[in-house]
Image (tube, rainbow, N blue to C red; front, side):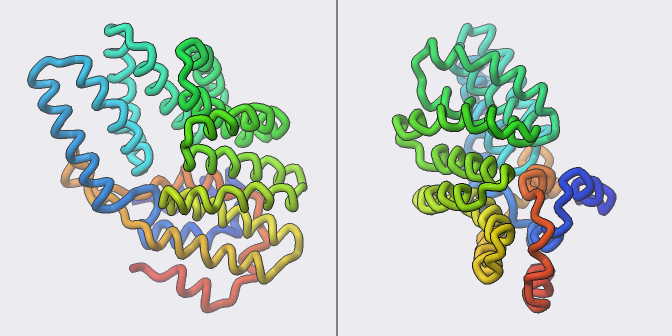
Length: 303
C-alpha cells in the first residue's frame, strides 16, 4: 500500500496540498487507473495468449502480446511489471527487425519516464523514435509520441515547447479518428495555457476534450480534465463552477474500480498509480477552502 511518507513526498514535489481531498478519494476508494473486471479480463486473456506463445517459441507473437500487456499494466499503475514487459518486447522486436513494434513499446516506456519524474530521459527517447513513425507513415504513432513529448515539456514547465508539439499532434489524432488521443492532447494544451495564466483559453480546450473522453468512456481522462477545469475556475474566481467541476471529478474517480490482483503475483493486491495521478494535479492550492465540509468528509470515506 502507498505509505504516508510516499504521499508526503508526492505532495512536496507537486506543491498541490489543495488536492489532498482528491488523493483521499483516489487512495481510499482505490479508484484510479484501472478498469476493474473489464481490465482484469483483458489482462488475463493476454497473459494466457502470452503463455501459449512462449510455449510454442513464437517470438513474434510474444512481442505482440507483451506490448499491449505493458500498456495495460501501465494504466493499472503496475509500473515495474509494465517496464519488464515493454523492455522484453523491445528486445524481441529488434531481433525481428520489427520497427513498428519497437517504436510502439519505446513510446510507452517514454510515457512512463515522463509520468515518473524522468522527463529528460523521456524526451531523449521519444525524440529518437519520432522519425520512425514519420518514415513508416503511421499518424497515430506519431501523434502519440508527440503528445507524450508535450506531456514531458509540461512537466518541465516548458509551455511554449509543449504547445508547439501538441498542436502538431492534434491534426494527426483527428486523421486517425482516435478520440481519446485527441482529448489527451487537448487537455495537455489546456494545462499549458492554464499554467501560463490564460485560464479562459485553457477552458476552451478542456471543453473540447470532455465530450471526446465521454465518447470513448474514459473516466480517468474525464476526471483529470474536470480537475484541471476546477483549477482554472478557481484561478478565475468562479467559485461555484470550480466546486461543480471538482464534484464531477471525484464522482468519475469513484466510479472506477481497481484491478484486484496482478495475475503474475496473485498474492499481491494492485493499487492505483497515485504518483502518476498526483503529478498531474498541480498548482491549485485554492480549492479545498471553497469546498463544503460535508464534501470533504464524503470524499474521504473508505468504500
